[in-house]
Length: 104
Length: 151
Ligand SMILES: [Zn+2]
Image (cartoon, rainbow over all chains, first blue to last red; front, side, top):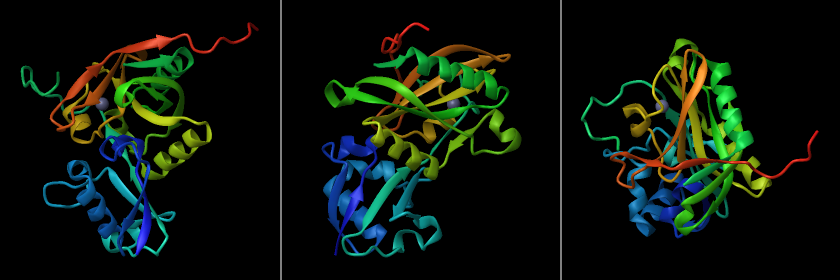
């Protein structure tokens, strides 16, 4: 089964600037695995060390966020469309200690 | 480098002051130029209501995926891209926090404005390192923007 995966601007640096990719997969998770197989450097931005989707990565199958529909097991129709949609979080809390060197 | 049209820069400041003592947030739309989109012009904003609640908004902001999707579609309609994120740091310097770092996405310009006692101050921009280890400062300049007829 083939579906279209829509990649947000932020991650197109990993996909040769392509915004849409035609990939094989029957579920949202399989499509993401196909993406990572093609562009391995994208993995750390999608998944944490345990292989779970990062909190700021949302996946929509059609118009529906997979968080409410079975997560990565959500089925994808042949010819369907899957979107990676970021959520953004941040704030002023917790600063690095002086000399911590993480922020240049 | 990111250059923000003056109107967009002024709107970041006024939103930051209006939201004080809470954090304001939103997305920056514009065009990408140069190698790897490293020269960017921010021409318009999508103002987003901080999705955090109550007092959490003093030190945190969040932009949900539905708002993000709305902004991506608005940008596409205008022939623009979502190129960055802005938020304010009430009574904190315009420097990314550890929390900003752990939640950051690559590529986007992270524009931060400090608000001291209700007055917008320093504005800075930052980009996440590809290995997620740190933010690097990104030069930010204000562009007068397209000429408008005098009124
Ligand atoms: Zn912040």
